[in-house]
Image 1: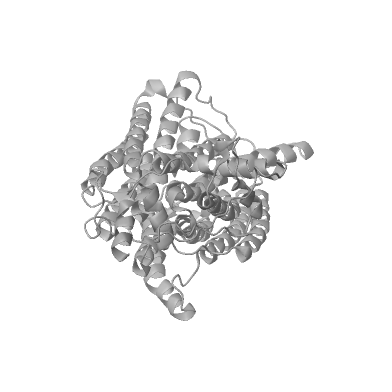
Image 2: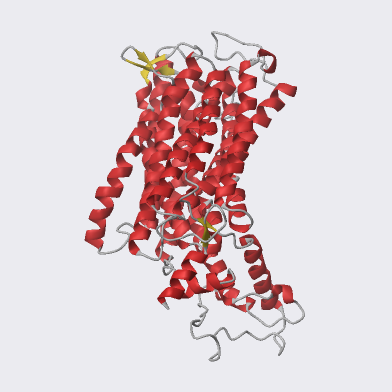
Length: 578
């Protein structure tokens, strides 16, 4: 039996030559370390531009602050939403290994286009300099705008594929059949966030300084070089990777079960539409165990019926239970969208706030887009501490494998985002007060207030990101069915995407509503000093508070799934033809 289980486990994975992966030779910490190094370079390539993009669009492409913020929010939202596509393709048809390589090449092509545009004056609008913040320059349009958006969204497509494939590829390197394997996988997600921060640190310091002082063509060039060298580094790990075999479309399974449940719940009950006995017959193979259907979401149980007239609706107990798992984790995904809407402010209005303030630290002039250095450094300190101090201590206290549950970690992130928005509102009120007292409301001169005030909201949001992102990835990967893990892990990035989109929608709604009752909307025009940004932040704080209460209700009722045992292992192997 043990030998059969060993064969079963290994049959789920292959090496890069499509031969069965061998335990001890494939997977493990060494294989995951290549993924972590690649993530440093990938996030450097992405954030080197994304963190400063709002200023590039406003200063060089002449978009208004609100338009620039919306373009950045939509770009980043699209990039993260496309992670679902990468995760789906990895689960269904390709592998995480292949999807990463394809996506990296696509992102490289987009960065080359943006580099050429930044380098060529004929592909950019004419410069527009004015001492008055109320002066409006001619925005980019026509072919120049097309080049900009083609480059941006090729990058978004590549980033999405990488985000959807790289984290699950790293997590797949660990054996979840053992406690140590699951602990190492949890540590991997912590260090994945740490590597995100390492790439971000280089991006918001060195790369941003290059963009502001040497030109954007060099900034885009750094990103291009980073993603280029990440490809051979990823390939260096090919000999030790273990790669999960695609199991067919998880989307098809979900829709098939839902369609069967809906059809059978409304179909008149008769002899031809009886519920299938889900127990394995006594004559079945002795190594197979009974499949039991749970009473949770019992509406879906009707999907398991004998439908001789509609064979396409035929589903198994295992498929129904997998869809139940997906539906149970979905409310957690919904609850994290508001948190990521708050995080969207880090690369939009917060950068523009800092750009109006005194960005000097002593004799050093700090670019506004380098503000994220504060939460990034904090994450780099807290992530190892969390993994090596907080979690071991929590395990001793709780006597549990996880110590701190995934949902507790996500909830901490949600609470910190509420605090961040309250701090952001107070800081913006202080900034505008200084602008008014110094009669600098319409001046391009930096305000006599240090930009370090804005770093406070970055600190809270950075901490929220650390707790929530690693918690979400670990939660979705661990709880999802084996055949849907890449897609489920991508929900972490899809939540970020929906947060960025929600930010754009909120800006539009706020402007429409406030414009109806006032002469000027809260977030309108080219002068940030005339915005009512503090009111917008208070609104975000209130919405985050409501969202947190809803999350607590969902989290309290959630029951963690059992760890994958030998029964599911054997079923998965059987489906692979072993």
